[in-house]
Image (cartoon, rainbow, N blue to C red; front, top):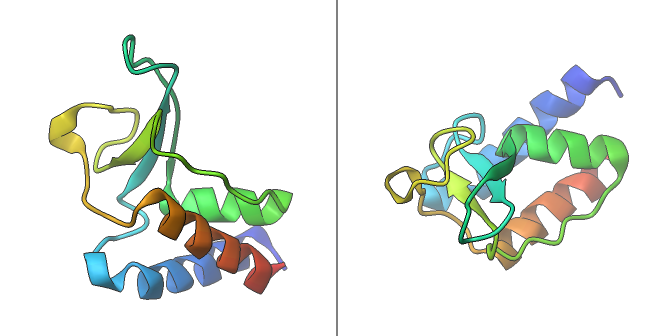
Length: 103
């Protein structure tokens, strides 16, 4: 399966899974920082790209939301950009289900 097909299918699965939160997986970013004191953003991927990369690498997620969270702006860890969405365990289940479905 090509990367574009995986992206399209992951987007569709995410849209369905995130329906309760009314989130666009292409416009919500999982941003991670080095620590909560310095808050230097080390990673930032849209939820769609997170699902695609993990599917391609067959890398099951382990989210904690200690040094990562959901944001409306890529590479931001500002509180005003935080997004209400699934908790870390729910996001892990959603992405894991996508990996198993598309692999």
